[in-house]
Image (cartoon, rainbow over all chains, first blue to last red; front, side, top):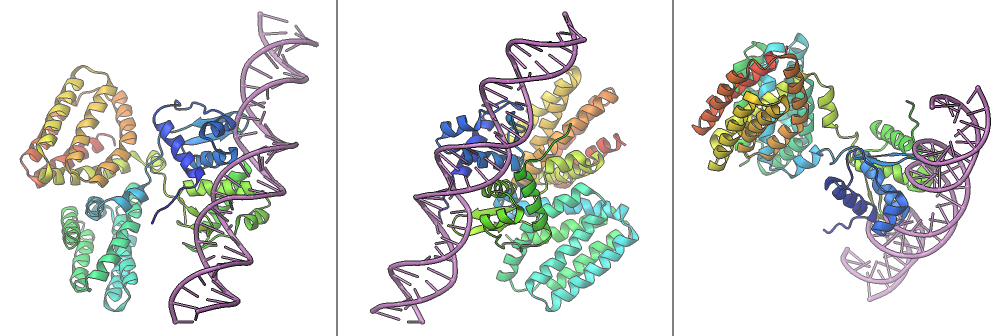
Length: 222
Length: 222
DNA sequence: CGCTACAACTCCTCAGACAAGCTGACAACT
DNA sequence: AGTTGTCAGCTTGTCTGAGGAGTTGTAGCG
């Protein structure tokens, strides 16, 4: 399926390319809209939309009466796109890194509220694994894993996990379609073992069990 | 300094607010440009610019002839901003998670080219630790750590590391200003030990040494 | 039932007009 | 000399009307 880009998008790409190539310095001013329009051979409103798009991506900033200025030399990495394009094994290894460390930290920092959260999400997950559609099961599974990460009380790790979730969710659903749910029952035990280690305040054990569980998930995909 | 927002930006904020409130479902279609323009009391081109800005932020997507659709319920997190605001200890724990796993994977996957890279960056780092300004030393240190992550041959981990680098760089420079470089010499040994473990294809040892080194860095900051 | 043609809708692009804001130059004043 | 006021000429901001191009649902036909 071909996908033709509107002129405004093409103009935005072209501007981004020139910005990246250093044609205009950081903080520098672009030519006026009318000039750019003539230069790229499009109308002024098209240029305006291109600039507005790059403003949305925090690359340009326009100030009325003054001009359009460069505030970043390249667009911030769009993690959603990066993760969509990356191999699922790469994504899972990233997840493994995050979650294993989170499990380790959680073992030191977990609060009573965190433990209660484990109980809830674990029992949800058990119910969902027995008699629910795939979607629910996946959500319940992710909810438990998120509970672990939350218990690490580290905003960066939580944010990282949330960034990974959409990609992981899709991969899990795809996987369940191919592969009948022959491993849910066994999984439940592995999940409870991780929670137990965190409850027992054993960082190394929590990390090891988390690593083993996620390695198994990863292996089942290859 | 006061800053008045243009109508188009205000319109984008309003749309984002409504999208976040669930007024339109994920994948749902927004009303037409003319309808929205009348509804918000602005011109059509203003709505177009607002939509274009949200398209730049990957919240909306417009398809000619079909309409404007919601592709995310909220703007993707701007990682640069997240990391700037996060506690440096949280950032370092994230880095530890990434780099420790990377060291483990590197021990299995490192190529001769990776080893050569270690040699170069390590000797650079040694020179810089002896008689260079702080900036150079920080760059050399980061270059070696990046070499480790690269040797894991995982695009996601590499991208994650690169996302963290600017924040880490600033923290290191700040740290060196306060604290005279009394630990460079000792550090060099720790770095070479990590490289040795990867060279010896010992995943657990590489991970452990990486963890211990980064834990020490983290502790020195508290 | 399946296919085609079409009408109604959508976004896309352009041009022109005017409003609003910034900047630098220069005159007027203290 | 230094400060203040004014203004012309630039910039972006907004609106409108026109026509082009793509999509979608549907009425009509075989």
